[in-house]
Length: 131
Image 1 (spheres, helix red, strand yellow):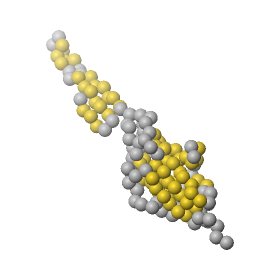
Image 2: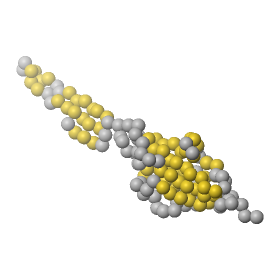
Image 3: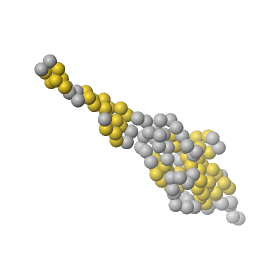
């Protein structure tokens, strides 16, 4: 038996049966990953308030009033996972329209095995129009 990441190779050695060599067998088992973390998180306008760390779930960003939309780009730690962007529970896609004031964008990551951890949040504050 050999393990590598989420893959197991299980084998049975061959043996001699009735004076003849009987070949062994091998079976490969793939296990679904439970990794639902991000490797990085980037925004197209402004910058996150602190350097990204996978264990940090809350981030902030500020943009000028002219910044009417933003693109949030998560990089998944495991390529077998997926993510959706949400505002108030509604799925959105990039670029995301911003209203004046705070806009909370959640990045919900789903692991290959279907599990999810608390989502990553980015609170983007769009400045008011200055007359």
